[in-house]
Image (cartoon, rainbow, N blue to C red; front, side, top):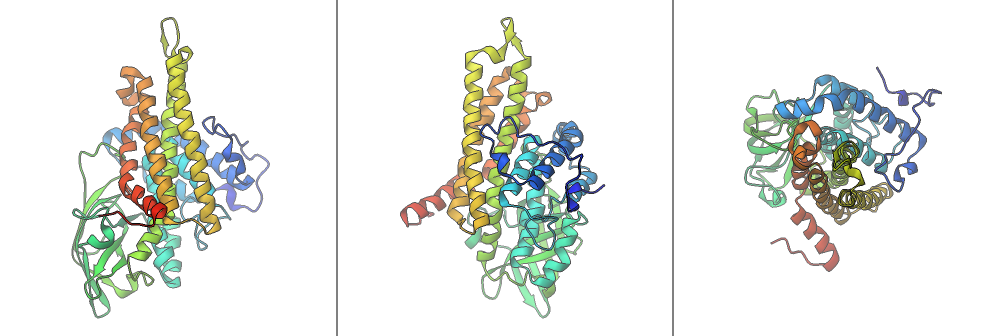
Length: 407
């Protein structure tokens, strides 16, 4: 089964496009016809095949069936930005809407695509040689390989630029890596992990393509996680892991390249935060129309309408912000401060929105059957990863004042 967008023309039976009701100002209408069609194809697949299974997977903390990964690859969702792997010309705004659509069904799915498409493939696209791009990107794009991105460590998170303790030492035509990583999404089940380590000789951060079958690589799933439970976050130990020089990302010379990858993906995390808000909001709207109290649907009560209106306001303002920051990426004008503000603002508004939506459900809001508690819990992980609120605030503050206040 392949994507209809692999053809040069849209078929006559193309799915009719509809903006989401939560897209109150119709931002989606700015997409091209081809982009709109893939959004509808993706939405149809997610509603039919993924939504019915996500609550059970979330409850059991189990990863998606590999068939889901395969179908996402067939839809062309992996490798959209990169010349070697994109199936058609597309915009950063479109890629943002993909993240929103994924997260409105399940934030773990948006995280999976963000890791594979942005962090993993992005590392190779940004810091790899032409030969590495040609060798690795198509294999990730096809879903043949599942990737992970290993930057965060047990004792290094926000200070990764200076605080990495994982060390890579050059030994002839190989590198020997020792250290530990933590909170690595799918690090226990990936086929390949992009490992960032400090060069023992020059102290600079460099990236490595590490097959997880390499002796000395051990990924252990973090248990008892209560957000993004479908994502298999892992502790990773690297004990004399030998990697050939050919697997060092040839363009990675310092943390500057790592930061470039994060800059590309942070805006899509902001889009996923909006999608998570949308998922909670849609569940709340549906429930408000079905739940009866005092002889009428609760949607006819003023306080319920207030919760929904405030939620829609947060969603609408967030869509406007992420749309513009993605346009700036296409224009080549997006800076760290722009993606940082997008991530800080949308995740903060998401926290408010999912809380208001959960409130609307009363006691039913803590039961997984009604979906909203999953969005509520997953919001906490989205709020924290790819830069905390505090760090993103300080990046913006530096741009405003011209003074760094990180320490």
